[in-house]
Amino acid sequence: MAAKDEWCGTVEDKPRAAFDGANLYRRVTVRLDGGGTAKVRVPRALWKELLVGDRLVKEAGAEPRRA
Image (cartoon, rainbow, N blue to C red; front, side, top):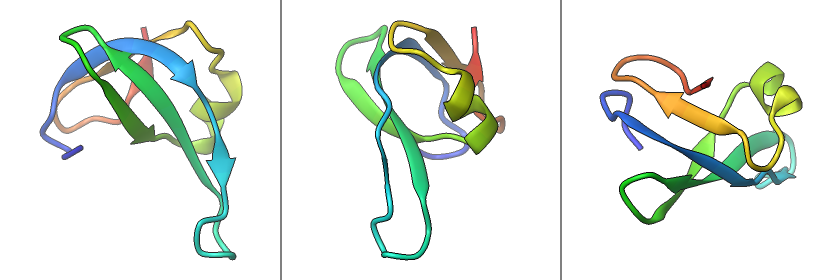
């Protein structure tokens, strides 16, 4: 998803993985209100506080945040 995108949805999953073997990436799978799902990379602090079922909002030019 691009920085200019706007969306809101519900967290369905929150895996973390070292895809390149060196860096740990934190992503959440979000069920979008408009339909469909998206895998979204989030900052560590947000990833640590999120639970499955929490609402996320992404405004244009901003990082995703808890609603």
